[in-house]
Image (tube, rainbow, N blue to C red; front, side, top):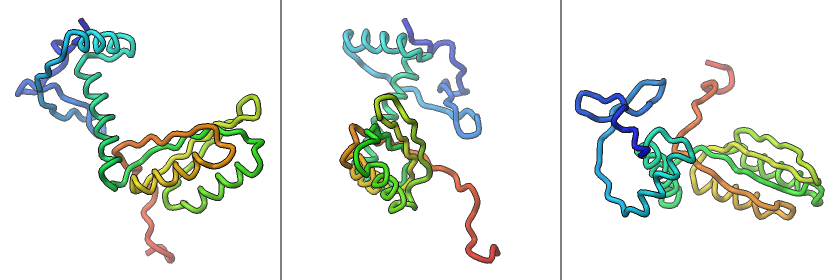
Length: 172
């Protein structure tokens, strides 16, 4: 059906390479997976609907997402992510409180973007990096502000590279 594995390039040991940093291919390992017919059918449907190249790509994507969530829950690794907020910008003080929170967590907040929507609503996306527990605290604090309709923290097991190495005052 939507396997596609047979046509992928392989390394000398038969592993399917995966895209690494800088576009380089890194070797991957082949595993066997047993699924019920119903689950396999659902997987094949999802592969087709979402446009995955293969079952392997779909399973790897799902597994990666689950591992990131696991790391977030069990550890305090530094991660990168976004906090997406949907709020009523006419709610008294909501924009100021959200801006104050971003200033309070200046070490973790990298950037933010907000878009004015119809019906006095705003969508704001805040790019963050730091220990997962701290990012969760920031997100929880923002999401529970009066006037915020909904919000969500999305994390990735990656880091933003430094833009410019800081060498202290005097630049030496």
